[in-house]
Structures are given as C-alpha cells and as structure tokens.
Length: 116
Length: 111
Image (tube, rainbow over all chains, first blue to last red; front, top):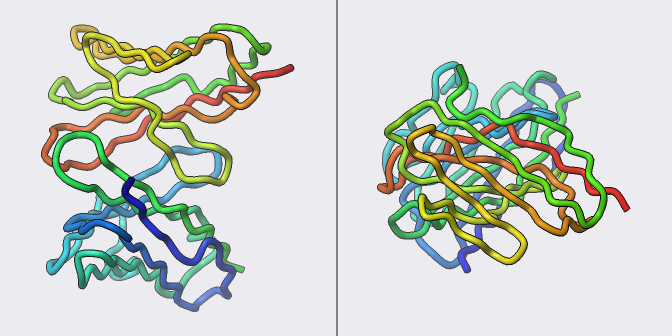
C-alpha cells in the first residue's frame, strides 16, 4: 500500500529556533498533502493544505509566516516551524492521498515537537 | 457546534464485551465517512469506510444514517488490543477534499 514517510519522529529545540519537518510519499505521487497538528487529548486539526507547485492554503487562525510550507515536488512537502515557542509543542502529522475518491489517505508517522 | 462530534469517553469495557460508538456530523453535504483508529502517540490508521448500507469487517460493523447525520461503530467480542482512540472522520466530497476529524472516543478494554 501507499507509504508516507515523515521525519523527524521527534525533535526538541530551543525557543526561537526553527524546525523543519519532511513528509515524503514513497511510492506514489501526491499533488496534495495535508498538515495536521494534534495537542494532547485532542483530535487532529488541519493546519494547511499543501499543493505541489503552488502556495499552500492555510486554515483560519494558522499563521502562514510562522508555519512555512513548501511542496516543491510531487513526493515531498515540508513544514517549517519558524521561531518556535513552547506553545508550538505538539504532534504534527502529514497526510497524502493517492488517487481519487474518498479513500486512500495515508498518514505519516508524525513528529513530536517539544520546544524548551 | 463542532463539525464532527463524538463522546470522548473513556469507555471502559471487559474483554469480550460489545461496545458501540456514535458520531454526529453537522454538514449535510458530507459525502465520505470513515472510522480511524489512533494509538497513543501514533498516527491515525484507517479502520473502515462507512456506507449507508452498512458494512462489516470481522468484529467491526459500521453504519451510516444520513437522515439523522450520524455514524456508528460496533465492536463485538472486544480484545485488549482494541484499546485505542477511535476517530470519526468525514469529507465534504470525493474529489480529494480534506478529512475533518471528530475529537475521538477512547476505548479501554480490561482483562
């Protein structure tokens, strides 16, 4: 089946630094990838939709200048958390979709970010 | 009102029990429906799609009621390994639109 690889799995960084998270579709091309954030005991909240070759679409309340998304190829999307603060500590998960129809969403294994 | 609502639980049940979860969605234009399972600190994984005609996969049965805008998941003969959070998920259309997640229902199966 389709596989989405997400790296790193976990990262600890200091306040004020930037962290890049990569999401790769390994055996399929993904023109669209989704980035979610999940705080403890809460569900996944969509942050942005990443479109290959164009600007990402951000959900209301998500700062596009803080969460930079680049989707330069059909198999790679990156999320950069700039000037991270402790409140950015969360579980970030990407998702890609193979083909059309309602099924076929595959999730990366997630990145646990801790900002100290 | 949230777009997709679930009872957060936790549902604490003994092994072998039958347990049912419900989920309601607010947008009547929703077209695709799923149940995902998420283990602690892991990514969600598709459990099953949900159809109006109902579908069954082993011990799991999912049902969709479009008129009442709710989705159900029934787990029979619960196993310890069924302990997880179950996420109700909908999409607005089948053309690659985003998944909208419910808050999840936590299930704990006890020996």
